[in-house]
Length: 82
Image 1 (tube, helix red, strand yellow):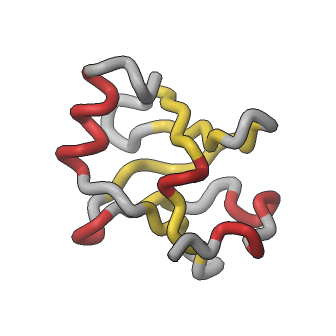
Image 2: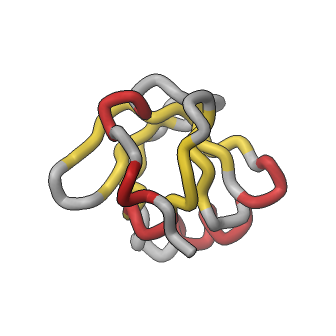
C-alpha cells in the first residue's frame, strides 16, 4: 500500500533515499511538480528523476522506495529514470 499521500514533501529534501534491502539510492535534492523526485547519487553525483509511485513512506530520516538497487539501475539503463 502506498502511503505517500500524507508525506510533507518539503521535509524530504536533503534526506537519504533507500530502496528494498536498505539500498542507498542517494540524497533527495529537489521535488518537482510532475510527481517525480530529483536526487543525486552519493558516489558519482548523477541526477535522476524518481516517480513518486515508487515511494513507500517517509520516516523523517529516510525516504523509503519500493525498488531494489538492481531494478533502479535497470530503469536508468532503459531511460525510464533519467
